[in-house]
Length: 104
Image (tube, helix red, strand yellow):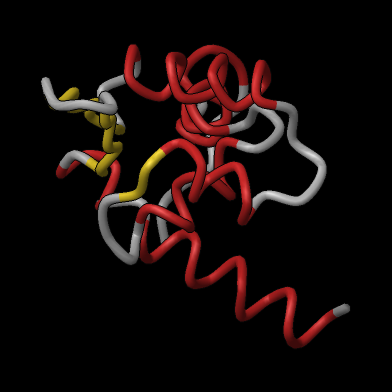
């Protein structure tokens, strides 16, 4: 098992700095199944506002967890997808789901 550090060298703290914001893990969860458009994400995340979704997507893009691809067509289309770095979170999210099934 990995040794658990505290303070600035703590890998858990560094991970939470990237994915610990509200909605971030749920957005990543939804993108694990493939590319999604903004409206698809908005529909799947009950309670999130369009503004908050836009902010979280920008944050995840800045952290290189997702990519945003814009298509020049009418009407304009934008798709979001996980990067390899984002897909690497799959096992963590799967474990979170298993824990939630067992303990809630």
